[in-house]
Amino acid sequence: MKDLAKRLGISESAASFALNGRPGVSEQTRKRVLALAEELQWSPHHAARTLSGITSMTVGFVLTRDVQEFGMETFYLRLLTGAQSVLSDRGYGLLFQMTHSVDEELAVLRRWSEERRVEGVIISDLRRGDPRPAYLRDLGLPAVLVGGPDPRKLIPGVTVDDGAAIRLLVEHLRDTGHRRLAYVSGPADLLHVHRRIIAFRRAADGIMAEPGVIGTDYSDEQGRAAAQRLVRAADPPDAVVFDNEVLAVAGVRTLNGAGLSVPADISVVSCEDSAICMALQPALTAVQRDPTVFGETVAQKLLRLVHNEPEPVVEAQQPTIAIRESTRQR
Image 1: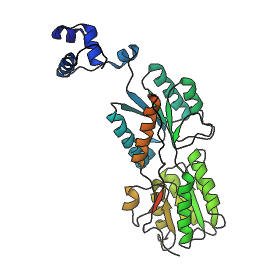
Image 2 (image 1 turned 45 degrees about the horizontal axis):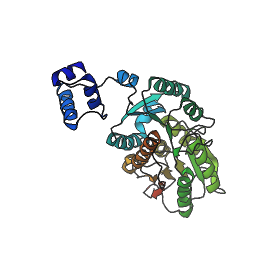
Image 3 (image 1 turned 60 degrees about the vertical axis):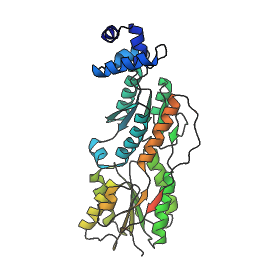
Image 4 (image 1 turned 45 degrees about the vertical axis):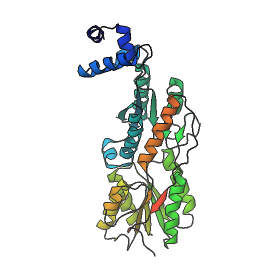
């Protein structure tokens, strides 16, 4: 700061005002300071800015997931792309960290809050009895939930109607003559999975196979194990709903390995769509939602919360079905 001020013949406070976009200097002086800073490749020190009371211009996202599973599932990658596009337009950065447990996630959130590393956070995969909403409220850290809603209404979220997505798939399978349905879900302690299971049981009432619902941890290995269990059932299903494309691909491989043809012998659908669903042979019937748009909406909501801006009325994305070759009329 001293070097900038000395070379330009101005005070250090004027250089500081110019660099930080504060009033008190002319536009000509501001441009001179910024041009010299760029020439010298100068950038502000995060800790110094924080101690000076300057905002971090960063939001955080902590995700408790297995790294390998995260790399295979495209939903969060596309969501992050959408969020980053909105944040970058407002001059914000995104600090992303993966953890192995909710306790580890809480520790990261506390550290970020204490160090003033972020102005707000995005959280996801709300669990039954989840401690994070109350924890964030106590920290005073603005937060938005991906999915939801939060049952205790402690933090706002961008809501997805998980029940509607399941009902669309079950109705499609009913309409195409399927009468023995099974659902390979994610972990039932995740609230969105819990809502999907309830919706599936209601929508498939009277036409559920046995076992009707098999829970997994979203891994390829457990997707294969679930499909093997269905194949060995006394009265196997004629259609299977998989919670995402990773489970669906693992399931199709297992069904084919057991000598079953999709869709001639058994139909397969996925609750999440991606390029993987279209590339698979046969291409998978799947629920269509745009995670990129979802990420944009999440980031917009968080920035409005951070800046105390009014919340406009926004229509939630409505899921639709892409009907492809993995289902057929019975």
